[in-house]
Image 1 (cartoon, one colour):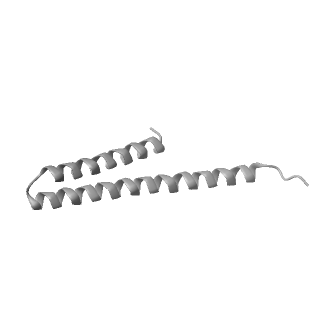
Image 2 (tube, rainbow, N blue to C red):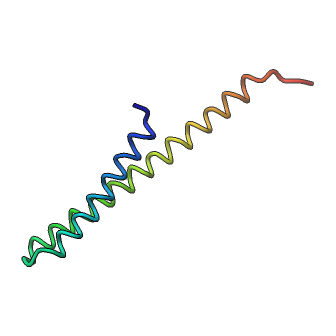
Image 3 (spheres, rainbow, N blue to C red):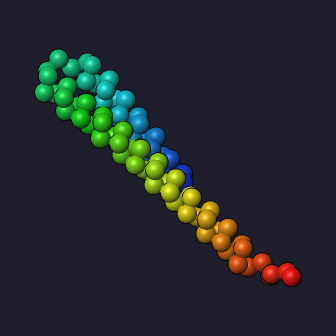
Length: 78
């Protein structure tokens, strides 16, 4: 499996879990459980954002290296 689809799948799962935990926190009546579910939702959202940021950096570095490789492989013409 390539890196990009794997990170996008992880990002999607984290966002889904975040919304699910928020939904569950609205359904419960106990205050401590609400706080724990909101905390889990925040952590899931942050994990998804971190995965997306890592993917963006990875793709950026890969493009830069590919451009550098193309520039160094071209013969110089005078």
